[in-house]
Picture 1: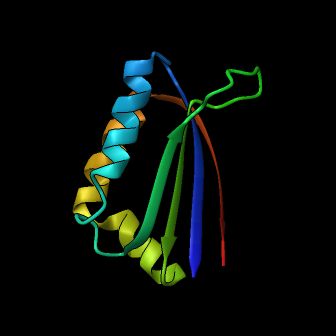
Picture 2: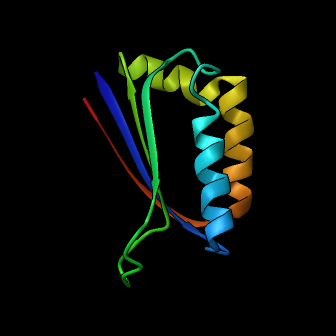
Picture 3: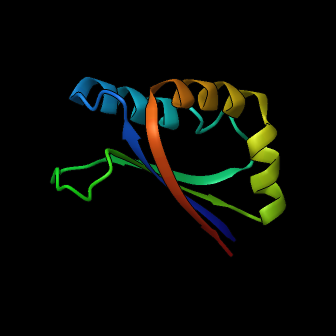
Length: 94
């Protein structure tokens, strides 16, 4: 299994914007065949070190992750993400 975890800080971290991004991530389930499981959440503490939205995705392999990155439905989601996100950090591991 290959795991992809990303944390996002939004340009405008309103509750509506957090939920919109979370819904955008959830829309990939069933539309991106490489995804084995996906979870997304919004921050509930609002600490200085907190990020606004998280993404946790599992793939069968590293190659599936690379195929996911190029999959058209994911590219559309990524385009939206880049328009609303100020900063992100990630970790990817097998």
